[in-house]
Image (cartoon, rainbow, N blue to C red; front, side):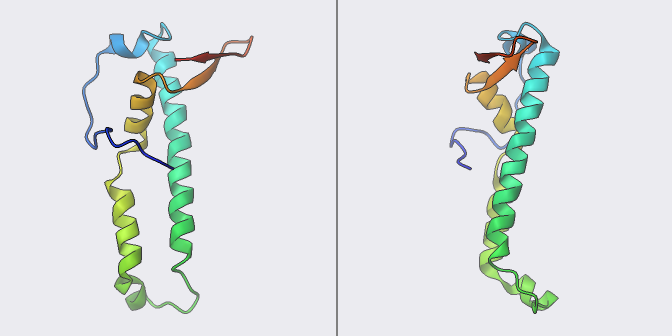
Length: 110
């Protein structure tokens, strides 16, 4: 998964008016952000597990696991990434998300 470079690592206080402007309802906006954050978290976890699977072997002992520098660097990279909720919020504010609304299932770009 590719992360945009301009996403901050720390949380930012947001105005509620900025979040509910597109949907008209703060709870709907938060729901959209939460669902996208879950998707991002799942993608990142799958990607990390795939990369770490290259380093695992059934004969590794605890000492060998801690000594693997490449594995440690990969883990540190993923720890430094912004949290999925921050990424999803930025995508929402930048109008990069598509979502279905209501019973008609109409796709809306926000």
